[in-house]
Length: 148
Ligand SMILES: [Zn+2]
Image 1 (cartoon, rainbow, N blue to C red):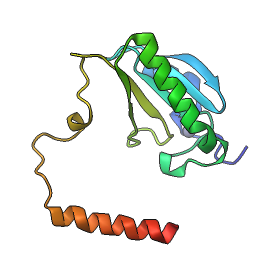
Image 2: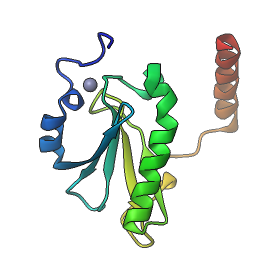
Image 3: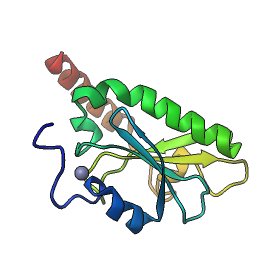
C-alpha cells in the first residue's frame, strides 16, 4: 500500500459514506476496482467504477490498477449493457466534484435521457477556428514527443 491508499477527506475512500451520499449499492469489488450502481436519477443502472485505492484522476493512474483498468472497464460496461438491455454503456470521466478517479457508467436506451457526446457541449458554443485546433494539435504532438 502506498501513502495514497486512502485520502483523509476523500468521499470515495470511504465507500460506506459514498454509498450513503449517492444512494449506491455494490455490484462487485475485485482486482482493485469497485463497481456500484446509483439508485436515483433519470438513468437506471447508472454506476460508478472506481479504484479501491485513492488515485486522484485518470492522469494519475498507475500501479496494478493501471494494468487492471481495461479489463475492469470492459467487464463493468458489458455487465451494465447486457443486464439492462441497453444498446451500449457510456463512460464519462469528469473529476471536478470528487478528486478520486471514477468512471460514470450509463446504460444507453433508444429514446432515453442520454444525449451522447454532442450533448456534453454547450449548444450555444461556437466552433473554434481551424488555426486554433491546429495550434493545439502542434502543442499536443510536441508534448507527446517530449514524453516519448
Ligand atoms: Zn479517494
